[in-house]
Image 1 (cartoon, rainbow, N blue to C red):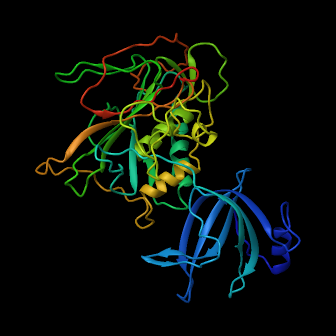
Image 2: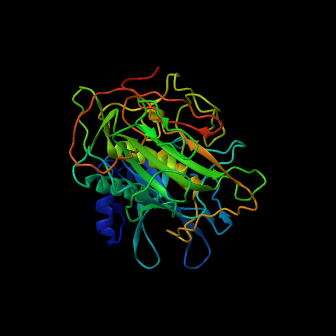
Image 3: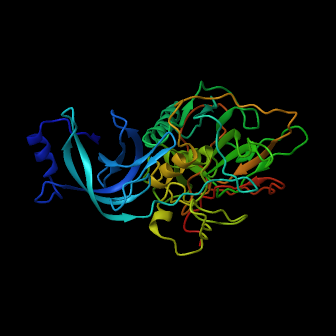
Length: 423
């Protein structure tokens, strides 16, 4: 719920004197900035920025302050609180004030506490160019086989909810959305179809042409494969061309709800794992480093090792590499994830535009790369399943761990979900 004051002064004052208010009528709002938007006032004389702050109870508050940037023109008010940005963790004093037309809004009277914005990491090319989609929309295609682990087609509703959570979460600062197209029988691969595949029978990528099947580590709950342009000479360098998600229904018990009973196999809550994988599809990487080239966060700092003593803001993040059996806390994008998407897709023009993805073969600029989708902490996250359509019924299975050959000559990162901390 977004708080918007449109009542007369007396009512506005009663709202502003709720819990946390001061004797002056100011209201204290503490939380995370989930979105901002700067606009000119009607006279064209001043820029105002509206920030949406989500408090600990999940309530969203809309507050306004002077300053910001619109269409390449910036305005700053020196000695006043700096304009809030997405990802900031703040405690602000807000005050009800009337516009010239008589409407009421909450304005920022002061910022008593402000911490640095939540950290996020983006997947990059070999040369360090962050990956992103060319348009403001990506469409995924669910394989019609679905999974035996969840009754009927209930998995589709769960995944639809995850996609909506991502789109709604970034709506305050980005026009980027991920939507689902018409389900169809499909397989993963570079074909401009962003497939979501459950693998219930074998945690392996099927053999293709002259290449053998490739099996994944049984500790991995899900993998996301990104194919992108990797050509520093191209103005399309870093453009994502195809993204596929595979979920492990062989070594994990895929479920619609949490509450793991402690018995093998480890439960992988679909919303938890799929939310993480969609983050990879959008272009986000893990919050800690577990091997391979060491990525950097949005501030240019080396991402800390997963073996370090990590702070909660990293281990509790949706894009953390590990997770627990039955975990649900990664089932929604949080401030750091939202900040990452808004950094990659900051524009609000052309919302929902899904540009046709193509490659000019004469330029020879497309090359494949595999994104890693590890969820740190326990066994259950990252990956999608490719299930052959058989009778749909939930069944438990023993936690065997198939091993397969590694994949060489590809930039790829795999999501590792282990039963317990991997430290």
